[in-house]
Length: 174
Image (cartoon, rainbow, N blue to C red; front, side, top):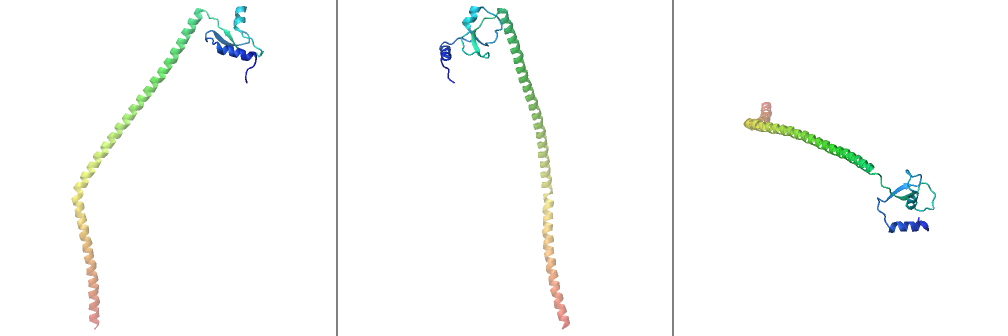
């Protein structure tokens, strides 16, 4: 919605002449919290055609007493100190957690290294045993070949003996 009339003029004057934030505060037009001088209050409030109690208006800020600012500053610094201490504590805890995780990971890798060394050693032992058994395995292969050749000779001899027996029976019948 576009502003018209007095509202537009008020907005235009506000946008042309910015006021530093320390000079203005926004408050509800309900009852002010502390009473100030009537003339000072009249200067600070801008006229408004809207009678709505929830409308915010700009008022000139009054400076609080010096001890209040000091107390507020101390309170702010104390709270910032607590906040920063909490952040630093959380960061330290994160680093401790990372350190513990790194230590555990390092231990796991050391265990894996030991296991791989043992596997490598056992593999070398098996290779040496296989190399020492190789002559016997070669002899077994030779014996197997000889048995196969002997078996073939036995089959040939069996078939020849059957043929010979058949011829002998044929001759005997004549």
